[in-house]
Image (cartoon, rainbow, N blue to C red; front, top):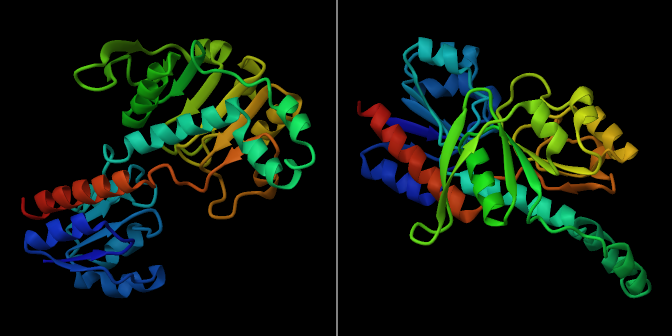
Length: 314
């Protein structure tokens, strides 16, 4: 069997697939050429760049499996593929820790003004050192603060674990999950706790920090109405999907002081985010790198390969 790995895979994943007897093609085929080429393969592995939509599925009746290295399946017509008997695979567990740590990195950066001071120190640190020291002297500790976590899937749970490890109180919101049991810290040295979901309104009214960990649902989960219910000075972090926050409403809340600062790893118009977000002085920015650590990529490659092998040899 032949597998097209169109958006790359870590070496461990390639080795596992080849050891299982598969012919692995790592040569990328452009999206516009896939409909004429994909039928040469039994399966395709993608990340976020390649789209596997209904028309491509119809053009490739030999396709037996679609693998997505990562959590989101926005770029795949999942239900249609399943209706055609095609296995659809993703790797939800592999990158959870990396995304959770990035969300917390934004919170730490925003709380101590790292994102702003790193912009100003190179040009102004030599002449306005004491002024900058005074300007950024009112940072906040995360211990004792309330962290609202929207979405209690694997990534939301990992974010909660990191927050708990820093002494934060967690206010989880998830209409589909009422409780989760978590082990925080090293296996032998950590502690166990149970998180119980609260209402969105309760979380919005009490959270000092809010972090989103939900899939794209076709509309913003945080918009003007939700911002109005938040505490003044709240910090917002989004390492989930673009579109889950109304960007116009976020900018309005930042400019009014309702939201003290925001950390964004995802945007509506990727890969071309709007300039007023990119240049806003109260936004900490990363270019959709939540899962982009060496550890996560190796886990993704390994998990994807193992699941593809199981699907194709079933």
